Image (cartoon, rainbow, N blue to C red; front, side):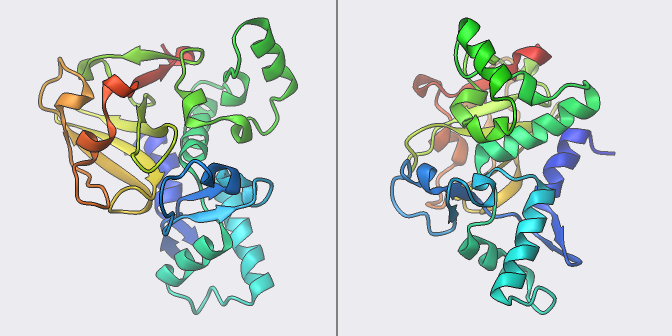
Length: 256
């Protein structure tokens, strides 16, 4: 049986709507779109205050689809899975990378540790950060970016593959994005690491699982074999993970 992290990610990746299974597309707010370099052809773009700003839970996303379909007279029953995914992109319904990782990790913490991520994430250092977290704890996910989730206030760096655990996050850099992207590790065994993420940078779009084959457990992820490809056909790990840019594996301090 898969662990709870895998199961929570699975809800986005094999998303059920009206008896059909689809993949939740990548979606960002118009504010986030400004950080894109080039065209976001396969991403839904939404207003910051609409569609949960690309940071909805599976339940919230399902409600958005049903409401949009009713408003636009879109027949979900007759539509194919691809039709529904295209409709979601058109309507700006989906999830961005930090929203995806935030909710998967938050659900895991609630189930396994009886703790909400809302009570843990700091955006500023010292007393100011604690006060801000207390006052603005509601909808914390809307105020949390990939950089915030993986910064030194909230996480520690994990240097070697042998020390990686499910729940650790991978901070990467995409060449079409001004900022950081985030991935969550959901399974680790002797041979490979399974991660989950959503993006429009890779050949397979939207929410999905990926594999990193382990070559040397005593080295970092830059020395392992990433199996995923970018849209341009480059190896995803070689293209997106470079410690010289600040890319790294990060563990929530609460789990350290």
